[in-house]
Image (cartoon, rainbow, N blue to C red):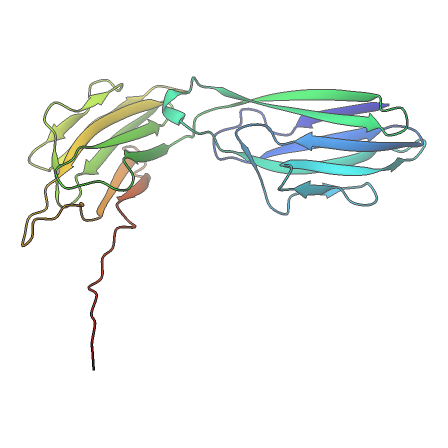
Length: 261
């Protein structure tokens, strides 16, 4: 029995596509292939192709590529599929982030199995901006909301612009960042701003707080929805990426009308 697995991309970047190719050889044996997707990877729908019969399949329930059948003498079969890196909590990761994939080929008669492992380093995107909010829902008026921006642009001179959403005021002294020089809050623009060079293969973080202060008849208890969009721009090419976060997006209230006739 012999099996190998290799990736087709060197220097894979976050959100790019990674192709796995499995080569199977096991003369005249009934075998089972099991290749679970690695942590931090999402299967690309429709990408699976194989020369085996019946065709290999991707199981969403198992989160794996599966096949069982007979490998004929003097034949070499292939199974090929694609994944996309989906790495959570990008702010706390040390880059590059390894994605490790292990596949197993089992002889169904003797239950003997072999495995092979391939590790691919995932690098930060060329220009990347991600934003999260805590809490995402259930924020009450005059409570504190924390925004976290994660940005990457290896070796690029960039500009960050994050205007505060309507109905929110900046919490003085809450801004913290890993970028150099530090990001600042501009009261004139009512926005978080920064410009500088992002070092290669690093992920930087900008974090700040706001407080919703909606006023009006009845003085709201729950905050109205807050819609916030931030931009990261390559100052040389002018290319920009943006990200939008909605807080309390599910908190819609309609008047209840009752009529008795």
